[in-house]
Image (cartoon, rainbow, N blue to C red; front, side, top):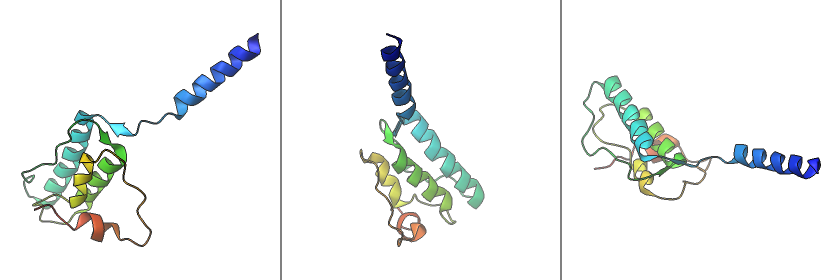
Length: 113
């Protein structure tokens, strides 16, 4: 009788530890974007631009991370947000970035109007 209980406990622990949350709550997502924007704002000496990309609901972690990284990698002057920040409104995670794409050229330099 102890064996089934042990096996059941083992699988419960295994599945609980392996479940990885792939979304970020709205408040945390907005905080992460704001922190990235504040970093670049201080680095450039510019105010945070208007039309801040605000998360609405839970956001896919990968899309949020791409937006935050793109903001912090952007060059001065800080007057708009990278176009990749639109992905925070997409409910599926972004796929793998092909090795031949330059992250900066594709995700950082194109800006939202």
